[in-house]
Image (cartoon, rainbow, N blue to C red; front, side, top):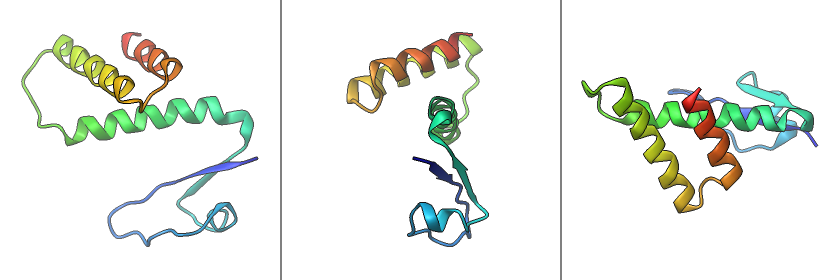
Length: 96
């Protein structure tokens, strides 16, 4: 079964539809089941970037930033927001 990601931005109209409506929305990205793993990875990266953009800028070093991101991932896993597999994959991407 296909899925979709809908990109919203300030001033965009609210979306209350489903997959069929998403096919008509220029702000939607439709994908098939074969891409689920890649889409999950993309979603995690976007969510990390969104969380990071909400944090006040600090003059800390890159290693402090990395450890902060790792702490955030651990917290998300502990809260149940990430599975062990998702946590491991996200941690691997941070450390590469």
